[in-house]
Amino acid sequence: MMPDVEISPGTLLGTGCSSDVFDQGDGWVLKLFHPQCPQEYVQTEAVLARAVYAAAEASGAFRVPAVGALLPAALHGRNGILYAKAAGTALPVALRGATPRHVGERLADLHRAIHVLGATAHPALAALPLQQMRLGLAIQQAPGLSDMQRDALRALLEMLTARCRDNRLCHGDFHPFNVLQDTGGGATLIDWMTAEMGDPLCDVARSIVRLRFAPAPGAISVAPAENVMRRLLADAYLQRYSEALDTPDARERVGRWLPLAIAARLADGIGANESATLGEWLAGRLGCSPEEDREPAHVAHLD
Image 1 (cartoon, one colour):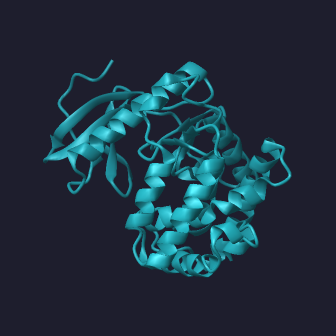
Image 2 (cartoon, rainbow, N blue to C red):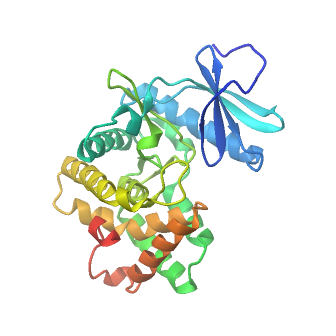
């Protein structure tokens, strides 16, 4: 049951780009959104989180926090959502001391569990937006792109979407800090604001970009000393995921989504250092049209 108490800040558990999370006691946490987040944004997250929770509960494939009340102007005018408190700590903390390969393989196994779910078996997922629509909006909104680059990305999106015959559940922002692992090895997957239905290989490409280039929480850039570890982690993740697909061209198929994954990341309002790195890569990559894709991109080409 939801706590029948007056909402208060409680103990700060974490801070993200859009919100702060506070412990409310009695097994609940309050996700309190920053003042600039409109109520519609918060309402959308609640709808998506409830849909994913229903599908995850029905499948038993993985755990997702239950969604409690939507709280307009919960505290000092800030909108909030109550979530059931998930056991465990973020994967990098839970697996501290483990090799990058072990972390990458764990992440791949969990990501595969997400991608098993489709709207046919789990009708709740029909409430989720389509990946194609979100990527189209990202292409339009990503800063610093030329008209030629946007046209090339739209053509690539149309081509790759036409090849997708079965939309599956995609997280949209799957990375180690969105996995909470408990002492028994169980995992709860959080932060479903970007959930959508689409091609899982695009979801994998987005995770590759995030693993390689997104600064850790609280940092403004990736430290040079991290680069080797990040390459190993990303490669282990992609290798494990590709082996599960059991198709010889799995890595190349993921690579074809990389330009769109980077455009989506650019549209997220990321920092200047990451934007510059990704923008430079994208400018070089879009020198050929998608129909004449001479060399499928893959992880190595991100360097």
